[in-house]
Image 1 (cartoon, rainbow, N blue to C red):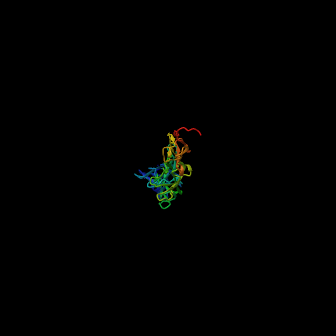
Image 2 (cartoon, one colour; image 1 turned 180 degrees about the horizontal axis):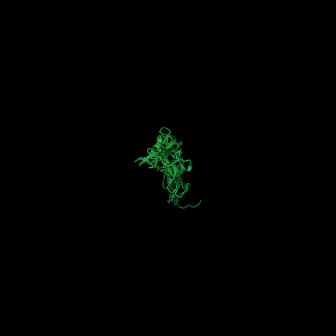
Image 3 (cartoon, rainbow, N blue to C red; image 1 turned 135 degrees about the horizontal axis):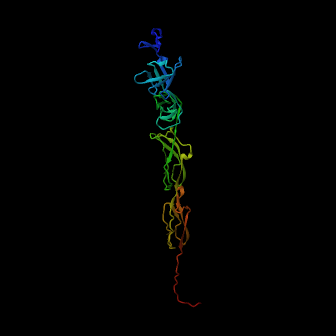
Length: 362
């Protein structure tokens, strides 16, 4: 303190006290209408350097969020400070405005899920914590396209056709000012077939079908096929050829896998096994009428040559009815015609001799 005549000093630098005078620190107001603007940095420490005196102020707001803080405020958002030169102070009522940190939406790797919300995580501000360790804040930007369908959308602040808007996990301290074009790709269908074991030939159609197991529950998907319905015994390769909606219109939100193995199925209708008929154990002798070599009748095979009249040795043939794609095999796995020997023995005749009176040869 100095003993000076108060009237002889610059009134901006003098404060009378107890009959003496003192030199008070010069009050700074940041210029700019008394407001200091700083961008959110994740901490409660900001600096200001007076351009004239070079004095450095370290400013500590009462909170870390982007907002307006007032010097000397008795309550609410306020800030305190320290100074590198005690000859300077910050005038009460001066404000610190912490503005939001601007983010740009990067291009995301989005696949259609029917949700209309596609999040992407980005890095926010990086700062040092109390231990001197760098800390980077993570912010989730949620892209919200105007449609739930797959397609390409551009960034906008207001929703519209072909546009997407965003939401933020920390909207207090961050804002999105621009964004990359976003492409939501069609979902690759995952197919599961309803086939586990071969069918057995029975003359009827058999069908294999597939289901899209990763279908969005609200979506209707129908499938078109090749070679998925057959009746004849054999080996087949079914394939899903298209994905369509309930109106048989091609889907844009789903695509078939590119790998053939992911959309095809090898399936089989096995032949039906047929027991071979047992031979006829009867002994046949010519009797002048047709006689039948009896075998068990079955619609799955045809018997020929089993009805004969005359004495002799004949072949009886049993042939599987495999024409027109039928599927039968004998129980032992063979398919050749069966041959049975049908023997009709001649009838034994005993001659009848009439007795006569003897005569002398003349």
